[in-house]
Image (cartoon, rainbow, N blue to C red; front, side, top):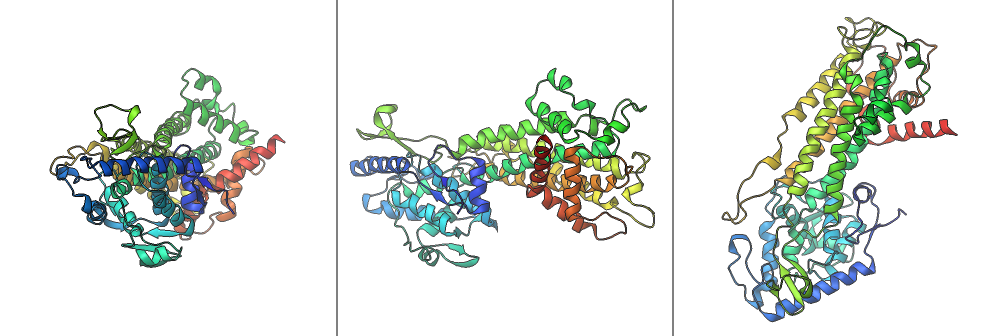
Length: 524
């Protein structure tokens, strides 16, 4: 059984999200987090008993904030909130997206500032561990007040409504809960708004995006190093001295990668004293461009790690002694309304990642062109990497696909720059962070495919190197990894199958695993 992931509100990482979302790692809630949940709930109960008007507890929502709700209607208020906000549209979230959403919501609630009962977080944990996946519409979030509509679709299942999938079977919410011996919840004061008010769709998608983006840029270093070899480029541009006088961390890391991947390369050594003075920018500036992409992904990672372990609903429940005395609440409990649900801390770095992955795809596509284009490729390479070009097209159209994916990334908008006021203009500035997350994930997927195409062409170009020249340690492992899934291209064939296999090699992490194993063995 996989090692459990701790939902403690403090230590969740993007890798934890990926493990739960993709590998079905179980989730556990430590006792210290449970105690925080119980204390926060006691404070909510105290506020309810006081009868004082408190937003989210006994008032309306959004524009209806001034509407006072009678004590007898508080539970109905929370149920109505969930039902009315389940207004999403578009495709349904896939399995890993739903699991990321569930985990993010659970981890935010166990921080102990939301005021839900312990049974609520237990239901969420059981749903993850037993594979109960709410059917959630993907569109409808504005990223403030958080990801309301998607989270409401999730919460419907907790109250026995909506739909969920269990082992691929679609069923209504109550039946889905029953598969794990759970009953529908009757939401108490504050629990409806606590469940739907937050950035958990955005941060769940962002966590998966940053894991995938970092893998893509590491694979791009591998593909770029192989391209450098097969185009008879030099690795001198990756020298430590160059990185040292412009010390961006990503630059240095990518430069080191190129050097270690091409260590002991007879191909590189074979033309050390050739007449070429400099390589094209797509080869020579690899460390600078890949490095900038690394730094952009690192920026998003920092934001995601904070957000995963943050309380993002509204209002939040605090110890009265620790807050502004003007806060609403009671002697022991302070209820503060604020804006932690606003998605801009994620939306902006997500749009930054979209820009960065577009650049990664752009430089990779240019290296593909240098391998296939007869007007710029080296003399030892045949047009479009195939003998008998003209009769055969080789990998000509693979470069078209790379160009199409690149253009798709370039045409993607930057949602955080937009704003559409809602809720009677009470919510007059929103982040569009969920759309930023969807766009960033799409940009990562496209860039990953482009890198796969470069890797595919690099392996094919290697077939035309002199037989007596060996690759570097890492580039040899990359070549062998490609050849395990794609045979050399001799006669024309449906190239989409080659592209799909190379893409999977990168996206799965298998390429990185094979290369790192080879590099480690070389040190023994």
